[in-house]
Image (cartoon, rainbow, N blue to C red; front, side):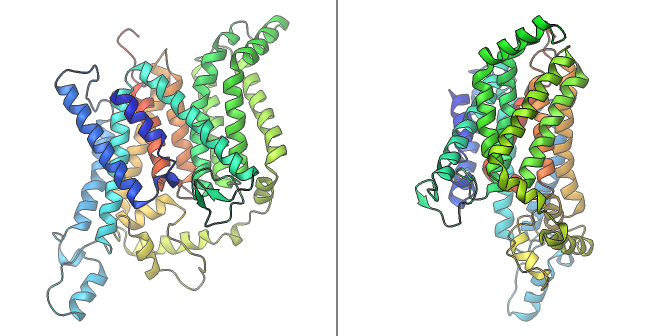
Length: 450
């Protein structure tokens, strides 16, 4: 029952605008803390089969502890005065009385960002504990895939019907693309890409027997396509609908990063030889590529226009990257405070940047700007290490190897999109990614029988 509650809570996260509202992420922090506490207590009392353990991710957790500890120090007033942000030092000089100084320019935002990061880690930790059970992992991936289908259908209805609404509210921004329940189409594109990846285990479960005779003979090809269509029609339809919504989101970064992740998934399959019929895998990849191209031609004309019109010199976000690189060179070790980008960046932007930027559209540069180079690098290394655990698990597992393969591909998706956008900073996207990675790592270690 606790597992089902946890899973439904995460699957519902996209509804309140991607959980990207203070009340939403605060509520989720409370719910996740209570869920984790109850899970630990029931495990200690031996009232559940779940076993609490950090294996095999203890070292990534140690790395993740570095930016958490540093954020607490940025918020506190225990750091030396020489480490404080220059604005606090200026305030001490100009204002009467004693003023507590901080490394962070915005201590309150630092604690909010730290609370959100802690929530993401809690989702990963709880997912890891539950999804060591392969049945739970199967339910997790199916749940994400079907949730992605529901959100895609809703987004398509709103877009094609030209309702111009977000849930039961009138949209406060023009709805020129599929946003589903997200305010930003790029954030939805990342979420759609993640749910698209989780639909592949559902597809392979249905068509696994189709690979039995290969595709080199006439009978093998006939057997393959008949079984793929008769048994795999539902996941194929699911993939087509989510892909259509992804294309209609018109997100260039979301489309390219998802395409890269899907390609990586099939490369992993070919190299690992988990399905020992590479010809059948290539046929399946070709069918998916042709179907995707057909969907793109029918519904992706605006996306193609945006791709064709892409010019780096017209992208103002690259001016932001240049400013951030200079700012990071000036403040490389201490950072301006975790979660402080919106207010701190105002001190560095110049007249060449006219657009509104409350996020950097590059998560790596933004985290370095806020946390400092070493602390942000520890956070990146923790995620990268976890992705490598998934990749290793593909070769170590004989059963359920597809789950760690999805985990590595999902990491590539969010990692690539984070170079040009901030989707991983939207709570619902981060929750979904953490849920996937917890299940993937939970299934990355071979069982005793294997």
